[in-house]
Length: 121
View 1 (cartoon, rainbow, N blue to C red):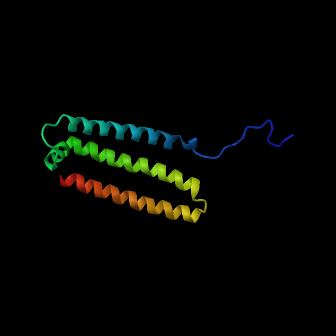
View 2 (cartoon, one colour; view 1 turned 180 degrees about the horizontal axis):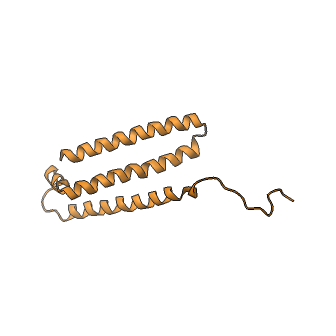
View 3 (cartoon, rainbow, N blue to C red; view 1 turned 180 degrees about the vertical axis):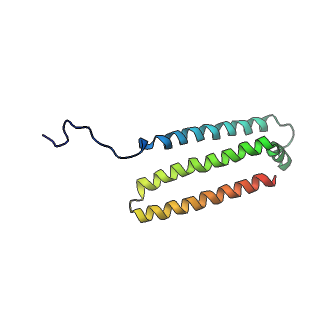
């Protein structure tokens, strides 16, 4: 008879990935809705689609706020995905730490660049 037979197995961890699961789903929905909104605006725009059209779509303050929220959602979505890859495939803890730090630097840089582009319009 096994020493663990008849006993509850104790699993260590906090919520077993539930938060990451919800973050991936919620951010994906937000990104999808935003994409549909931008496509809707583009499809019902008359005339050629150039810089003025794009600037007009993103000019209202509510659209800038929504776009900023989507930028944050994309960064969070990417972070959860990349972090999962590093945990699965980068086994040495030191390597995983370096890869995660580089990922954070890259994602924050991309987010800063996206916000800069957004507020230049």
